[in-house]
Every structure is written in structure tokens, then in C-alpha cells.
Image 1 (cartoon, rainbow, N blue to C red):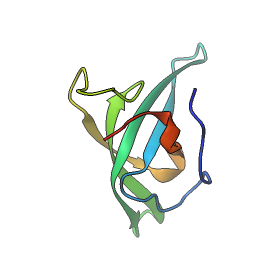
Image 2: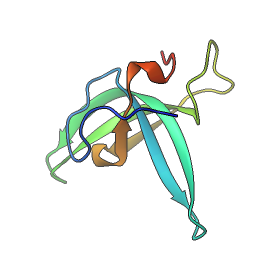
Image 3: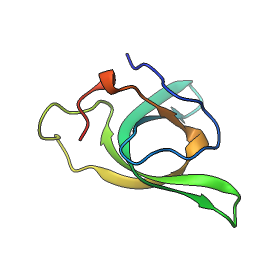
Image 4: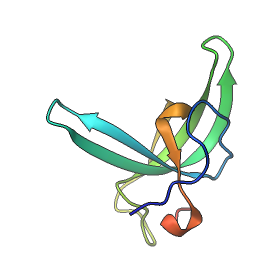
Length: 91
């Protein structure tokens, strides 16, 4: 469904990059996927890793107006997979 781009792990992610976050839900092995766009990325010197502020849009990128408001979350960049441009319109 989505093609991964770039390396994984602790790294600086450019503003505007489309990303995917996969979260394990419960003990039954189900995985919830959210996609979003990086708004800002920085190195947290106290914690010694990169963090990104991401506008998440749900389980897929909308075509046109989103069904709901995007929500903003800070995540360690090693939790985020970068997506290619062919993975949806984004913003």
C-alpha cells in the first residue's frame, strides 16, 4: 500500500515529508497505521535523539478536504517511516 523511502532510525526528517506511524494495539498483534506530514524536526539535546512534530491525517491521505481535523503529535523520528510522493496527495 505504501512505499517506504529513506532510512529508518534516529535521523532528521525534512519539513513536508510524508510519514507513517504504525502502533501495536493490545496483545492480539493488531497494528494501527496513521499517516501524516512533518511540520518541524529537531534534535532534543537532553534526550539525545531527533523528535518531529507531525500533523496526522488518519489511516490514509485524504483527496481534497480531510474528514476530520488533523491532530499534532511529537514523536521520536525512529518511530516514523518516510513515504514516497506516490503515496497520496498530502498537503
